[in-house]
Length: 90
View (tube, rainbow, N blue to C red):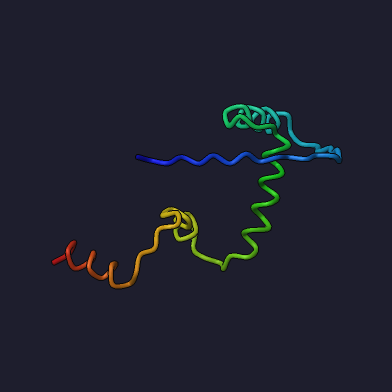
């Protein structure tokens, strides 16, 4: 049985910000937000928050960065990894 936990984020927005950008970018942002079920303001807020979080991470090559968090909370020991490599290549 799989347990599914959903988190609800509460966005409190009390200050208005006006951004000026190309109309095509605005259309793309609105389409992307609609697909994600979010507002453009929510997406922008998440983006700025992610910049702060990225500042705390070490500089890694793009491929390595893209893999961060892929395994979630799973812990793999060095021994498990070595065992996997031996089984795979020998």
